[in-house]
Image (tube, rainbow, N blue to C red; front, side):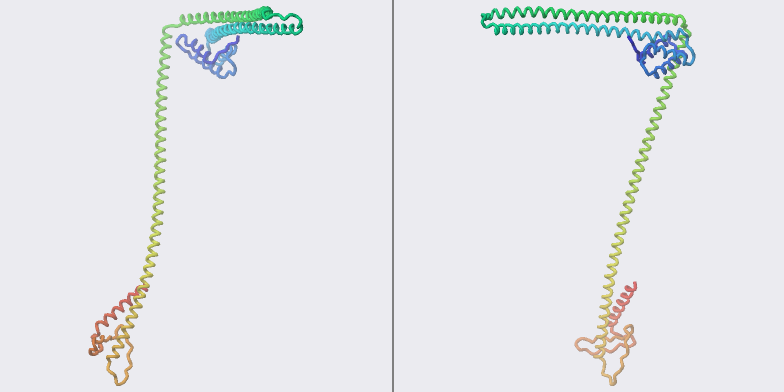
Length: 403
């Protein structure tokens, strides 16, 4: 039987052996580490020869040295796992063989029943066929009665059942013989394996007991206390290192979280600033466009109002000119009507509307004629007002056109 171990079984047995006295030396730790590396790089199954070879290679490659007794105790401790595992496998195999024997017995019983039933049915059908054939071949013979025919069939069936029983017994005997031989072979193999496993377990137990006795004898209280102190120091250092690593890890996590939060805040602030900037630019652009539109509308409105005022001023100027012309004509007409008839025609002087004398209007209902206004400023006030209004309108129109 070929038994293999897994990595956990090998290392746990070696750890138990190394720590049996409560102290782990530097050499033992080096051997364990080197052997663990050998196991990790091994590609195949962990058989007993392979395990022993790897342990020898680890001993040659380790830092420092271990004694032959220590190496043998380590080897026996690891290989004893194989003997224990083989015993378990033998017990499992025996249980499986017992279940297999029960299944074989059940199969034999079922086969016997089926064989008996099959032979009984065949002989019954054969007897009926022979009786029918005999009846057809000898018609002159007196036909047997139903009782005789049934008796004949029953005799044939008994013969068939007897033959079937013999055949089933022979088959059962052969099956029992085969099962017995298989059981004998399995039992012998199991006994051999159990004997080997028992011997290996005894040797391993004896070696372990011897090693334990030697270790107990060699162990002193001082070494034991020293080992305990070393273990406690290592444990305390491990706890301190674990606490330091946890604190550093927590600080790193906290710094990473703070950095992440700062980055998120900065990104949010930039997004808000960018959004505000874009909003302000959009509002500025909208205000600019609105101002330009309002300016353009105001310009167009001012131009329209200016054009309307210009046309109105021109119309008012033209109306003033027309009114002045009418006033001048009326004044001339009144002067002609009111003036005495001269003996000789007098050449009229050109009139200057800025300084000319305008006679008063004639009184109503044919009143006396008005006298012309001289240079002393006695002109008709109405005429002066009309002339002043016309002059103001002319000056305003001129200024408007100039502007």
